Image (tube, rainbow, N blue to C red; front, top):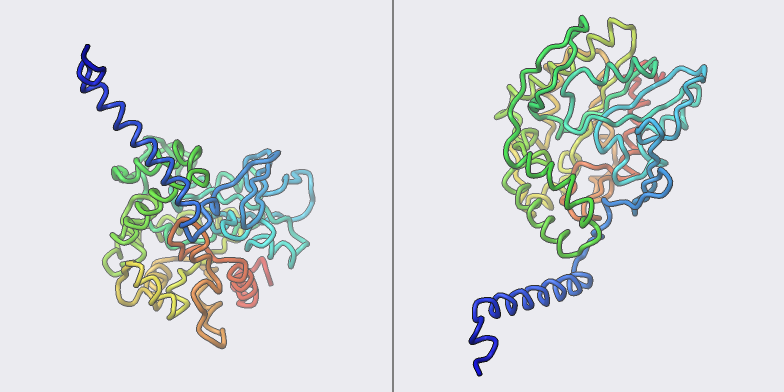
Length: 357
């Protein structure tokens, strides 16, 4: 009587290959637990009753959906709102040690509310609408260099200065952007920080994209090549100017802090990231991106965060003021607790923003 393999050779071979694949995946998952030099869950959180618990600290999400304690809407203090991306959110530090909380401790006469809703930079006037909805008396915008991205087409409309709905002139997002959005909202939620194999493969892919000059959005990392991307930087400045003009009309102080990258504040970091395959245009490390942006900004209150590091007695080591190698990414844009503290201290000392004088 013929064997099972002889009767069903293709099916048997397929089952055998599947069995080998499962064995390999299980082995890789176990082996990577002892090999990987970083915390795969560093950027991932568990959620407990409205609090996201990260290895670096907790971040509360209030009932309004913002990363802060509950807003006291009946309070009589003047209100300052903080907008931006993951740096303002508190990635790498937690809510107790981030920029906005440090200013809250120093200036208790205000309510300090963290909104951090601008994941891809200023795309429209949503910051203005939020400020109006929550009766803000001042706004601080933490500008991360990776906010230099085109307006991303969503098919939605926004309101212009007169309140009329208009279609935003936008760029169709590249395939990589769409793929990354799908990854962030699907497998990442289940596997990142939990599966060593998935996180390892994801990290390899992200690091490879970084080396090819692709940013976290799937767009080219324009901030690393400022001369090449002057037009885009000018467009980003125009969007900021538009928001600032609306706030000026409403009598609301609008202050911008430009947050540097680690290779701009440390010569050692330049070598470390270059060795990792990160490339940038000559002049970027000296702040050329910030210079082009500031030249195009029609703002009164702009603070360049590079200034906070210029007064340090010694050249910072890699990781002294930025997250660097704690988790599953090449991280040169998230200040750590020491970085947030230095930026907050010098921001106030500079007297750039009238809210903190």
